[in-house]
Length: 121
Image (cartoon, rainbow, N blue to C red; front, side, top):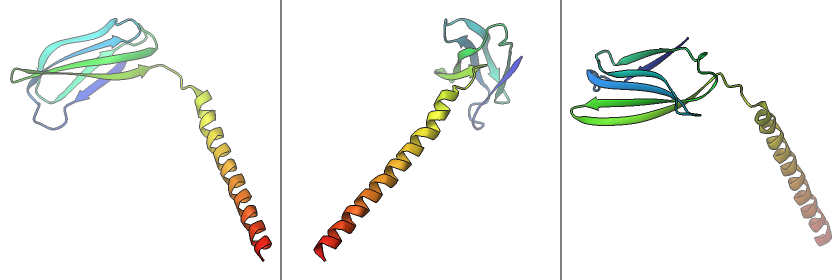
């Protein structure tokens, strides 16, 4: 079971009507829905059992109705996905190679400058 908490920023939107829907991105399947209701405290809690739906990418659809205006927003999130460690390795290797290449380049340039000074002398 996962507790999802959505909180309004600041008191201005309190007492507005909020609708919440969670869908699985792979197939658009609805995994949670809350009909529009007034949220007096500015916080909404949703309890979802993601074991039923499995690991993957999900999307929270939040619709706020205030004074006849409707604001729709989406928030993407992932559940139960392991980090791709292959990218982590590259995050170490690429900077190390770039650092080594910089050192080699600087040494070559310094040697060229030193040889030119010796030739001019």
